[in-house]
Structure formats: structure tokens, C-alpha cells
Length: 268
Image (tube, rainbow, N blue to C red; front, side, top):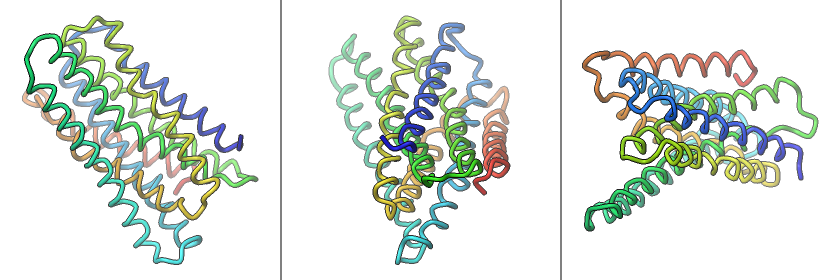
């Protein structure tokens, strides 16, 4: 197996582990502080927005100018729009399935349906994140430099950071629904299991089809932006009466941390 693919697998196994750590918070408390949860979700959104530009769109535009005949801006825009469209269609499918689950008779079956759809929603969000990590490692040349490697590691670390609150965002609502702490943890960490698979796929696509790289990077960026704007930012803005700026400061800190890491570690 190609060395870049192996590194992508290792990195996405790490991001999955961070998801499991986030899900494990359900073992320590049943009802988290709303302000703290808003801060964590806002941080996730800030990291995703920042990573979408510094780690995905910027290198996509640069690489498109080298390997594509079409204008770099057109390639990046097309990939970005397709990524957003992919997540929109996925969300429509999930919403339709959720509506069917909630439209039937109540009781345990209805509650199980809601739980399954919650886990599926977060799992779909993790697909572009795994792709982003896989693509970041897939672009490493056979004789990569330490600067290039650190750039890929930056993407993985950024994704891992925002996976922690996502794991909690799955397990804690399940605990509120009445699931046991262990079942809530298992469901939360399971939502990140798709990332290693997506990471390997992303790395393989880049390794063997280099011309797809700019489109793949932009695709992941579009998907991440849609998730951040449509899901995470509205969610972190709930219950702000006591601490109205918790979510906002989380977004600012997440963006700043990811930008600082990316610029300092060589992806700028």
C-alpha cells in the first residue's frame, strides 16, 4: 500500500479516537452546561470554516493552476458547489427518513428511529472530514518534505479538535433520550468510524488520479462549509440567554486556532 495512504489511515484513526473521547464525556455528566456546549459547538464551526479555506480551498486553487487546463477559479468553484450539493442532498435524505420515523406510531420504535437518524446525521458530516484528511496526505509527493508533512498533520489535528465536541453532541442527546451511558458512548464514537474509510478513499483518489486533487479539495471544503453554516452554527446559538457570547467566542477561537496552526505549520 502507498505510504501516503497508510499515513492517511493512521491520521483518520486518530481523528476517530478523538471522536470517541468526546463521546466519553457522557460518562461524567448527564446534563452539560449549555454555555459550555455552545462554546464547544461554536469552536467546531470555527475550525471547519477556517480549515475549509486555509487547508482546502487555497491549496486547491494553487494546485488547479498546475494540473488543470480550466481556470483554477472555475475548478475550485465547481468542486465547492458540488461538495455543498452533496451534503444538501444527504441532509434531505436524512430529513425525509427522519420524518418517516417520527410520522409513525410513538413508543420505543419511534425513539429508536430518532436515535438512528441522529447518529446517521453526524456520520454523514464525518465523510467530508475524512476525505479532507485523506486528500491532505494523498498530495504528499514520493519525496515529501517535513513542511509538507506538517501541513497534512495540521489538517488532521484540526479535524480531530472539532471531532471532540461532535462526539459529545451525539452521545449527550442520546443520554437525554434515556439511553444508558455505555450505549450513548458507543453510538457517539461509532459516528466517527466512517472517517478512516473516507480518509483512505481520499488518499487513493489523489495518489492515482492527481488531476482530481483540486476538485476533491474544493469538494470537501464545500461540504464542510455547508455543515458548519447549516448545522453547527445554528445549533450553538441555542439557549444564549445566560451567556449570549459563548457560541460567538467559540467560533472566533476555533477559526483563529486553526488559522494559526495552518499558517505556522506550513500550509499557508
